[in-house]
Image (cartoon, rainbow, N blue to C red; front, side, top):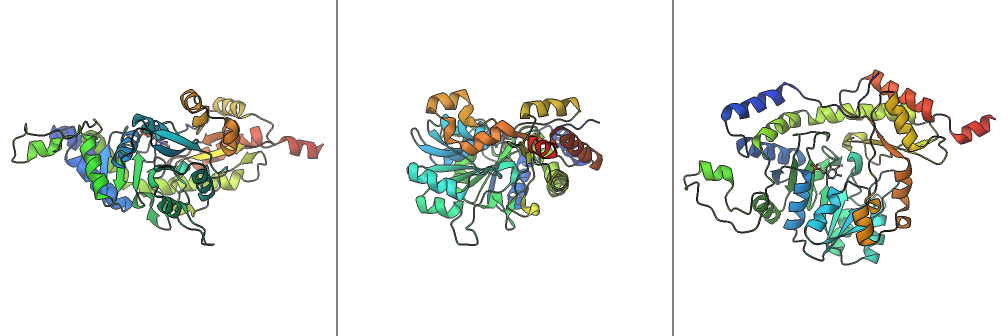
Length: 399
Ligand SMILES: *Cc1c(COP(=O)(O)O)cnc(C)c1O
């Protein structure tokens, strides 16, 4: 049996909307991108959305809009993709790396409080909602402050790296509806895709205006407006050295169709995750991810498992064996404190990141996509039982 790590879900409307765009003869940013922005903003409960050509672009525009400058410092989790950190360096600012919680892989209020004590002059927190699990934004039932309250008290702005977190919610409110800015990815294997693409969502009008301006060369009118308004098309002004980050209509057409199915896709991935929880829960050598939120609030973009110290097989061998059995996996992530650029530039020592280190040595992500069949799920679980089901300790106790 073959079980790829990811498989695209794509219906008839993707083809139909792309055909509309091709037939219209206007392939770059115009009506479809605008419609995608409106629909997406509505979907996440944000006032404004800006469609761009990647989540990385959205993250960059977000930090620019929050006026992050040369020498500023920004909290970034070490357990993320390099895009979360690199945009800080784009602006001449410096990432300050944080460890994560072992079971959710998220930054917690406790980690944040501790980091602020050591580094009080932080301007922005880049908050990754790992695998689609919302970080703890709100105060807990004991009244202990959540991440929103802590950041508010210290004047720290929040940029949500929501690349994994569409559609994810906290108590019924979508990630894109929380302050200050949320950035989503529509990369090829994300929960919905445009091939390459991203979206910045915010309620802040000034952020919206700045992001829209910088998305397209710092030009004071967008291209669509230049060709549709009564003002002469060649007449525009440049008010800042902006970027080339706009999302073409060709991509937005795919996004519109994908968006229609986002909640169906999410529910189908939840079904897969629940099978993994039920079938893998009693393998002693495997630590499953913990969900602190209702399964309906989780985007279930990834299902990362971790081989713990009782495992008799190493992560790399397990990946190899699974590959031989026809099962695709991936690793999220080699932490950034281990990457040459960040490690050398900021003299990062791995002892400072104990949870990320534990994860790094044992983690792998299982296949998770809407069209996975029960047979495929069963097969992945059977193979994990075969390869990791008997740990050292159970062998010992059997002897
Ligand atoms: C995919 C991803 C990104 C980058 O998304 P692009 O759309 O490819 O730029 C950023 N952060 C995280 C956590 C991601 O998984």
